[in-house]
Structures are given as structure tokens and as C-alpha cells.
Length: 444
Image 1 (cartoon, rainbow, N blue to C red):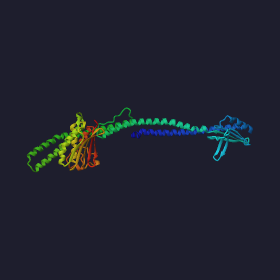
Image 2 (image 1 turned 180 degrees about the vertical axis):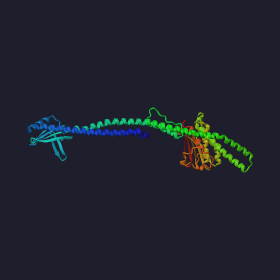
Image 3 (image 1 turned 120 degrees about the vertical axis):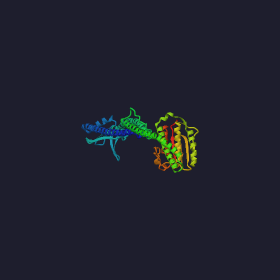
Image 4 (image 1 turned 135 degrees about the horizontal axis):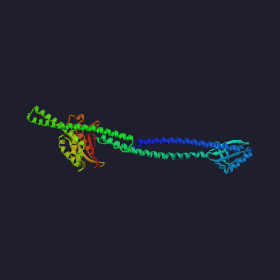
């Protein structure tokens, strides 16, 4: 929801709503001011016309009679007529009074109450008396709520419609952007077959982005596939000659007497065996990344497999004065290829045993987290520096402190390949101290 409110379509809709509201507000304010001025001018014209009519009366008595006649049926709340003769007598339905607060209009009816509201008045001396005509501004003041109602009636539906349209566009855009984001996440996670699946309702700009991402993914997949094929071909072509060299060294070791020459042959055989192990690991990694082994997936008891691998490596741990244990349920079923899962667990245990010193404790455990099986291999060794965590699964990559220890830098690469093949997520965490390798399998 937070991403939805921060999306560009909704922001544009909000900007348009604010812009339209401002323009509408200014237009209505200008209309209100113009209409108010027009009404006020009309009242002033009516006052001038009324005064001109009374000026036609020839005498003060005639003026008084006209004022008295017209004011009898006139509401003083709308029109006030007042004629004060030279002697001080008042004719009409009202009179003008003045106090410290200013001028007021008083009704001449019973009670002589002060009339509420504002009036526009015109006064003139006529035949020795003073004639005052005042018209109420109530019609002008009534314009304000009318215009406020017009403002709400016009703006509120527009705002609601614009926001609703913005939300609809934002949700649609958010779904399309989510498709692109998931494809990029899969690509960054190593799934080079991930693609952005566009649809007919996609906008041209998102279609262009989707095509660009797919083009980049295809180019990357071709490059990586070619590189893997080259490494696989090299490993396959050199595996047989290396094995022949190993056999010949074995034959040579049988005819060489003990001494410096025998030691040299033994060392050479050890190096050749290491080279053969690298080629074998590269071939196995290529086979895993090919994905063809998915056809052999079946239900595997991961708990029993972990328990067996721990028992296999317990003598090695004891010889190195290390403690290896397993913690997990009696049975935990996952879908996968048993030999590959066993190789993955073996690589993790070997890696932990090899890179932790005497007295280290290594624990392989299984548990459920949010309904998904999780394999954890935790140790209390030196761990891996944070800046190196993103590179330890690269082929043939080794930490500087590990270059003098046995290994070829392909163990964790194979672990990552097997995890990806099984749809599992591989991550490395700081165990404080040590390293914790987490492999989270998909839910059954």
C-alpha cells in the first residue's frame, strides 16, 4: 500500500487534482467577486432611481404622503423608506440612528427594534427635510453560501473521480512494475531464464522497459551459457588426459625406489589428483546447472540424509578435535534428487570442518520457518568478512586466508547450484562468532 501511494500515476493524479482545484477555486472566487459587485451596483442603481422618483414630488407634504404610502406594504428588512420633515416628524417604516458603534436602522413598527443585517443607503435633503432610502444587502450576502455549495458540488466529485482514477492507474502500474521487479530479482538471484511477461494492456513505456530487460537477460544468458559450456568442454576434454597422467604416475611410483624421486612422484600424483577433482567438480556443476536432473526428483527424507552425513563426518571432526552434531526432527520430507542433496550437505560440512580450528563446534539443524523447511549449518569459527559474502559462491573463488588450505573454490558454487535447482534460497549470516549457512526450501 505504501508503494501504491508513492507511485507515479497516483502522484500525477494528486498534482492534477491540486492544480484543477486551485484553478476552480480561483475561477469561482473571481465569479463571486464579479457577481457580488454586479449585485451591489444594481442596488445602487435602484436607490438612485427611487430617489429620482421622490424628487419629482412638488412639496414636502407630497413627499411625506408618497413615503408613507409606499412603506405601508414594504418589509423594512428588505427596503427602508424614511422622510424626516423640517419639524422632526418621521414618515416611513424606519429611521436612521447613530451611536458610538456607528449608524443603525431602526424599525418604526411597535418595539422600534434595530434591524439586523447590512444595508446600502442613499440620503438627500428634499423640501427642507431629509429623505433616506436603504436597501438590504441580504441578497448579496446570500451569494456566499451559494458559491460555497457550488464549490463543493463541483470540486468534491472531481477530486473523488480523479483520485479513484489515479488509484486504478496506480494499481495497474504497480502490478506491471511488480512483474518487472520480480523478473529482475530472479535475474539477480541467478535465474537467467527469468523474463518479463508483458500483456496487451501495458503502456508503451513499460513495454519498452520490459523488452529492454528481456533483451539484457537473453544476452546475459547467452554469455553465461557460452562461458559454462566452454568451462565444461575444457573440463571434459582434459579429464581423460589428466586421468592417464595419474595412472602413469601410479605405475611410475611402483618402479621407483624409496627416496627423493619417490617423494617427488607422490607429490606430483597429489597435485594431479587435485586437478582431476577440479575437473570433476566443474563437470558436476555444469550438470547441476543444466537442470536435466529435475526429471529425477522424488521425495527425500532430508532429516535422515543430514543425520547420515553427520555420522560420516564425525570421525573426521573427532580427529581434528572438533564437535559435530545434528539437531532436527526424526523425518522431514522435501522434493529433490537425493545424491545432489547429499553432496550439498557434504560440501557444507567439509567447508565448516576445514575452515574452523581445534575445539570448534559445528551443528547441522533442520526446522520449519513459516511452513518452509530450513537447513542450517552453523559453526563458531572465524566466519566470513561481510564484504566477501557476495563472492564466496563464485567459481574458484577463495578467501585469502584459505589459499593455503585444501580445496578448489567450487564447494559453495556447487551448493548454490544444487539449492537453485531445488528452488531453495541460499544465504549466509554472521553467527557471532562464526558462520551460519541457511538454505530455505520451498514449502511442500
